[in-house]
Length: 139
Image 1 (cartoon, rainbow, N blue to C red):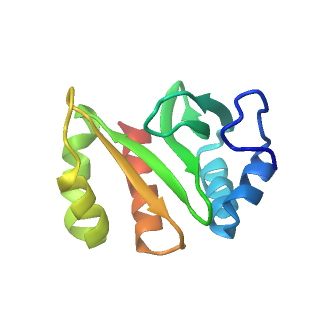
Image 2 (image 1 turned 60 degrees about the vertical axis):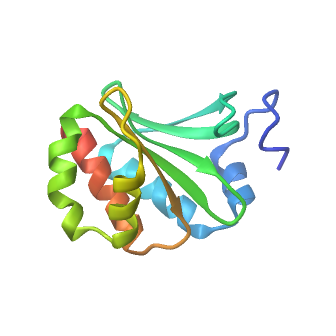
């Protein structure tokens, strides 16, 4: 695959998967596509925080999550806004300690928390992400 930072070349999702080199990436994409009947949009971000290509998953005009490809894993950004805050805080005790800690350590700004979650395995944290997305979709 070309350089993931090259904004002149928009990679296909399978090329991004080759870059990530982790089968969990495509499993995640398949699950979210199936669950929410949505399609991905590959976009380039010039943001210094996570510069490069990312994959946005939207349903009914709302971004459910954004995936940031990394070497061997990927990050999932889920925004917890005012509408999601109560429901998310209600399920936190049932989530993994990793997600609970991340939520508590993430600063709230403008009534939102931007949770950047590293996914390497199809484990409890992976399941937590889908719980957050479900809350986001239903809010």
